[in-house]
Image (cartoon, rainbow, N blue to C red):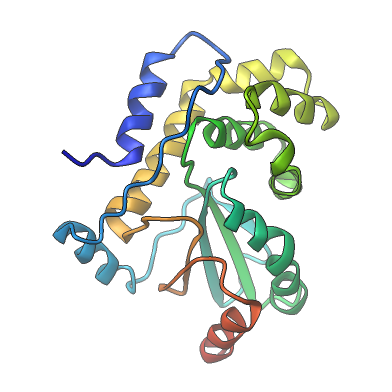
Amino acid sequence: MRKYWIAALIIVVVAVTGVGIYEYQGRQKAVPAAADPSATAATNAATAPMPLYDDDHVLGSKEAPITMIEYASLTCPHCAHFHNDILPQIKTAYIDTGKVKLVFRSYPLDQAALKAAELAECVSPVTYFPMVSLLFKEQGDWAHGDKPVDALAKIAAGAGIDQAKFQSCLDDKAISDRIIARAQEGQDKFGVQSTPTFFVNGRKIEGAVPYEDFEKVFKELQP
């Protein structure tokens, strides 16, 4: 019987509640759900306006007329490519000029990505996106080793987060529950099946497509 990765991840989180930092022992793969009628319905509904939340992480002016929502896993190489190579172009041309705002929502595909997302929640709102950027830039150094949590602890220390605070963040069930719930919503309501997935004023874009593809959509949506 097919099972979604988030359901499995919830079981893992419940199992380790109260244990604290744990070592990553293998990655859960996202299971495509294109053949599932409910998934098809969710994909069709994704063209409708999508809600924004008070705890969303927003890059750019909240008054920007174009909203770009990204679902990404911090261990996803394609997501890293977007953030390292494509997003800087979008930021210069559209975000910094007040035309587009980016809403980042973690969609962790494995335990390491969940722990990294929790680390990002440890920093102040002002430094959230710099931390996300750092995690993507250094993805090769922490995401694919035997002990990613230890590597994340070093990144945290470099950002001024001591070991006690780092562990406290990873032990905070409210943080992990919120991340998982938001990812589950993306899957169930909006048909997110892979990372990165974007919704630009409701238009679904899957994958780290070239900058020119995003630019075309932005121009079509500009008032």
